Image 1 (spheres, helix red, strand yellow):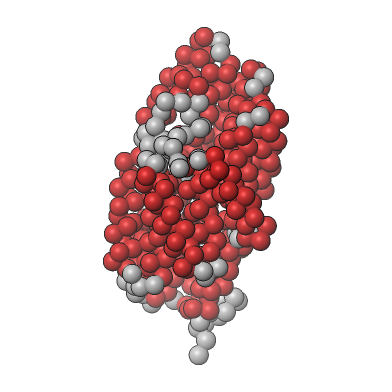
Image 2 (cartoon, rainbow, N blue to C red):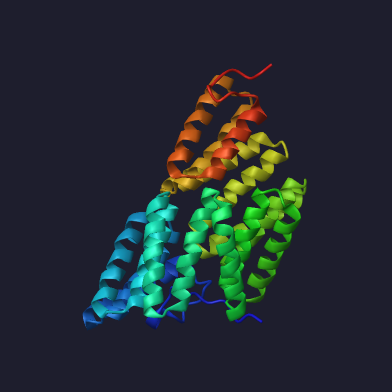
Length: 348
């Protein structure tokens, strides 16, 4: 049903790059191709290479480099008069904005990218742009607004046999079910995503699916199996240099250990994940790692008043980013630890 997974963001002379190529390899080849395209005076080839530079840089956590690269790709695509290439560049910019916690800007760029793709007749770029909009709404916790769009994109991806996009949509919908408490449905969808990704050689999608499976199993008390799956996924992240995915893997390991009552180990995982997120300037991940760190320290005897103050600060931070579901997680943490929003001592 599904063909081998491919990376449509690697375009032109770079389209033969494997979806599983290490990001350092992609970046090196893309920079070299960009140099050649500029020497040859080929604006379109330069746009394609710049897109690959932007995406590899973004996934490696090189935020400033990614920002420069997607804008250079857009300028080259505009010079070439190729609206599809323009759409891909703006899609990259929108994805970067989401990664940096600039969600309103992400929606703006992704909306523009979808319109450019539609005018340029690039069905895949349109799908990726709409997927970006759906994911932005999902991480904000606005499930009602984006649930139907996720389902629509899943149906389109299945119809076209696009394995990588099908895996993405399954994982997104599964995450919404998991956050809504529908664990059976979430687990089934994460498992289907893992099966499709494994069968189509999509290592990145497989690693994310394993993380989702581990999360649900952990919620049901399956700590050992969850940790084993996270270790398997971590190997993929390290091999491909998936910096952001690796940080989220470490944050999830902290979640699993915390649920098992292994608070000192959880604190260590959260602290490491926080450092990774801060290094790549990813505020959403940093805030979630901070939340886990605060909860772990509280369980290890940290001063309750200081814990309440940290939770208040996190609540404000998540509000600025616009993460509705994560703010609910802070409220749940307050209740779990017996703290009031005003920074009071634990309730009797």
